[in-house]
Length: 128
Image (cartoon, rainbow, N blue to C red; front, side, top):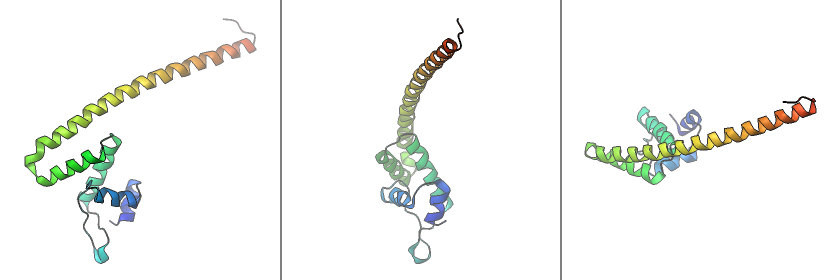
């Protein structure tokens, strides 16, 4: 696939894909005729993984380290796992904080709904 095709498929810019490669977030992409990037299935799996990990809040530096460790082979499996576990633990905390914020927002919204309902009742001459 060309960079334009990958860009459309994953909803990210060609510049972002080039950045991923320059920053070491994905292994170097093979080149076809005329030096044009030719993304293969393995490259696409890397793009998907990087998008997922970035959505999970993993820093670029950590992702680059992970890719570097993958290139070093099986001897780095435990280190790679540790990076993923550490990010998972951070994500769990973030989800807990987001859930707490969601609960507070829902509570505030319910209070406004109740206030509006009470105002409507007063305007309609209704009493509790």
